[in-house]
Amino acid sequence: MKNYLALGLLLFPLFLFSQSKLNFQKRFIQAENKWVALPADTSGSHAYGFVYTDPTAGLTLDFQGSFKVNADNTYTVKKKENDSQMKYRIQPNNTLVAIIPENKFTELGVSKVPEWLKIYQKDTVSSDYFYKKGYNHNAWNECENALVFLKKAYQKEPNHKGLRTEMAFSYNCLERYQEAIAILQQAIKDNPVDAYAIKELIFSQVKNGMVEEALSTYKEFAKKNVNNPYNNENAYNILHGYFVKKDIENFNKWLTETQITDDKQFAPYIIQMKKDLKL
Image (cartoon, rainbow, N blue to C red; front, top):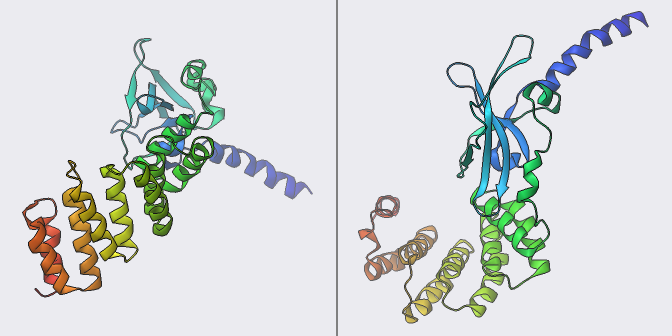
């Protein structure tokens, strides 16, 4: 029994240390409403702050200062120099941050939930709240989580502006193309000149192997004579559909019809496709 007890006492501080260790494995969007530390700079200091969503500006870091981790796993904290707010809007990126363990909050002089956070959480139940949450998660390519929020919005208000198309974006991201097509067809029925919805539909159809249907969608929308910022992207997606099918005849015909090779964004990819097709 004494041997087991001694081993337990030996492991106990190791367990505490592991609970306090910084693990840099979360993206900012996965650390919402958490205190986080950023990777150390050249001096070994970790910037830290609280990640939250501003309903207007999106994901935001409320910067509080920096700290160094000492050999005994205590923190040497350097607070920001003044009491002014220092907030940074976080654009989608792949930086990995560490969620700061709760047992370190006292050393940092912070509470688990900042008092000011309630200002930004007055609405947590409306369809618009869930739509914006889903939209933000899609922007970070966290499409499965996005769909959870978007479905909640759909339950409350199916006709919320842009909701069906945003759900389709999630479905496309998750390669659930048939579901994307179904909901986009309804979205376009409600708004026949929605260029973004048309773009998503063409993408869904091409990915689902329905290249001729995508071509029909493209041409029908062109008849509406609506300004379409996605026109070249749509044309490229159809071309890529022909490439995947190795349909050389229609591949060449579409190249001639669209002049898509003039677009510098897509030209390098088209050159590679032509090489692969031995054209």
